Amino acid sequence: MLPRSIALVLALVASLAATARPGQAKDELVIGLTQYPSTWNPLIGAMLAKSVVQNMTARPFTAYDPDWKLVCMLCTELPTLENGKARVVDLPEGKKGMEIDFTIRPEAKWGDGTPVTVKDVEFTIAFGKHPQSGVASAEGYRRILKIAARDETSFTMTIDRVTFDYNSTGLMLLPAHIEKPIFEANPLEYRNRNTYDTNIANPGLYSGPYRVVSATPGAQVVLERNPTWWGAKPFFRRIVVRTIENSAALEANLLSGSVDYILGELGLSIDQAIAFEKRHKDRFIVHYQPALIYEHIDVNLDNPILQDLRVRQALMHGMDRQAISTRLFEGKQPVAHGGLSPLDPMYDKQARHYGFDSAKARALLDEAGWRDIKGGIRHNDKGERLTFELVTTAGNRTREQVQQVLQSQWRQIGIDVRLKAEPPRVFSSESLNKRGFTGLAMYAWVTRPEGVPRSTLHSNEIPTAANNWSGQNHPGYKNPDMDRALDAAEREIDPAKRRVHFAEIQRLYADDLPVLPLYHRADAFIFPKQLKGIRPTGHLNSSTLWIEEWRWE
Image 1: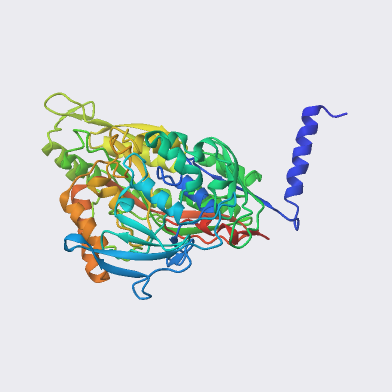
Image 2 (image 1 turned 180 degrees about the vertical axis):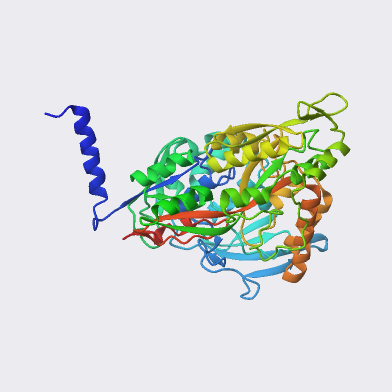
């Protein structure tokens, strides 16, 4: 008779073998990714790990599809000036605004059977406008002047300005019948008491093809088909999203079969994918999707050392980003010269570029008063050491490699950089959302086509305790000229004229350097050959928005 431990192992092996048997129906998909969100509330905090899961359980009103075209998802028809469902209107004091007509899909329901109605829209907008809501970016809500219901599923939204992207409404709704009483009871404490984080398995929170049935914080979330979903029936009965923060361990789980698919948007780094493809191309398809994602370093502009533009310029000239791109990524992730990708139609080729020039970096630091070198590190005339911290997400091998390269490159010009890595949830909620980082913070932003970077660069978007940490301008950047350029870019309907304002945004970004751009990322999608239907997008709206099209053959 076999010992119990060996018998259990053999039973597990037999079980795994059975699930992998060719031709057998597979109704469960295990997805691996490298982060677990700090909150599951759709409107609080901005974290890609939350977004990609949320896109399986809900639908925004509109989204950009894999062909980068704006399409309706929760709405029945895309409103445009041409079809009359969007109109320029006069507002008080001689101002112009817009009225936009939306109709919610009449068959849309929450997972508990409650219809999705204008009441959910009204509550979600009121929540976003509330000064204590703590939403990721409140500006989009503040510009909505009113919601006028025409019936239970149709409404007219009036906004306080004319914008070129008036019909791009990626709004994710909150269920008013569940969340409204909780929020109104104590708005300031809502972020800690909302149902998404206290009872994540409540079916009434979800209106998409899947609903969450269980979650183990930091480890995994389990989704099952939503019986009230109004669209095409998803192929998989159950989806398990497993968090493995160490990307090397994530790769090992894929090879062992513990994970079926690593999410392209938040999985293996490019260098890992390149090496993986060479070893396992017989079992997997590796697709490199150029994306509107840029890896960058936010600068805390409250730090007295980093407030000096000459120091920030020295940091730029002291980085050999081309060497990083070539040696780590085989050129698949090109150097970024700003937040806008060359793939974006608003990209300006004339924008200022910072090249690697260590002599210029040293001269700038001398000019800034950091002339005295002791033990290889610069000091000023007060004897203060030129040192600060560079923090990023733990478990991401690429970021840790880039951290070490930058530390070495900057040390060569006399700067002491201390490295720190934090769990993604802590990094997102504390270092970024509450501006807890003291020097530099390295991470990535993903945008949509022609996305105006208002939430990250406008002075009204600086997170503070007073606004309950709403906003994504983590550097604390303030420049009236940038504010005007951002406002003007949004308001310009004519693409040619709008391009001028985008060029000004890129110029000011390069001149002021509130952020140090590193490289434009590509997503590495590694598909098991049996997994079909995934369409990489390369922008803010992830492939999981079309999860019902995924299938196993």
